[in-house]
Amino acid sequence: MEENYAVCDEVLGDIRISDEVVANIAVIAANEVDGVAHVIGESKPNELKNFVGIKNYSKELRVEVYDRIVSVDMAIAVKYGFSLPTVGKAVQERVRSSIENMTGLEVSDVNVRIACVDLK
Image (cartoon, rainbow, N blue to C red):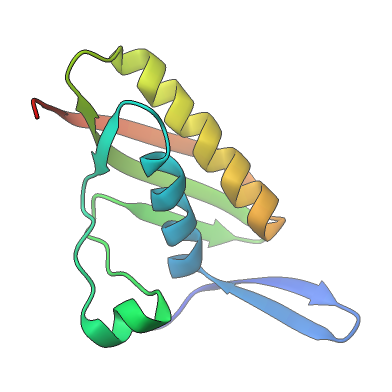
């Protein structure tokens, strides 16, 4: 499987940011939003990947980086009792802000699909 990277040209050389790193940022940011039960498609990493901070995600989470522009598609479970549109909008804003602040890349869109309501 070929790795995709965003390349930031710097004076001393290139800085490459893996799509998987951007996906990790998106998941962490979404999970920080009040009302989000979890991001759909998160899988438990094996011990080695857990040690280095790499997680595998299903097709429910898709991050594409092209020419320093990021597009995110994700599905979430929302806790029962929370406003679905409010949580969805908060996830969009948090994910965009986190990716842009941490990577310097521009986020064109964050598409959030509310896949279920968590009754726990």
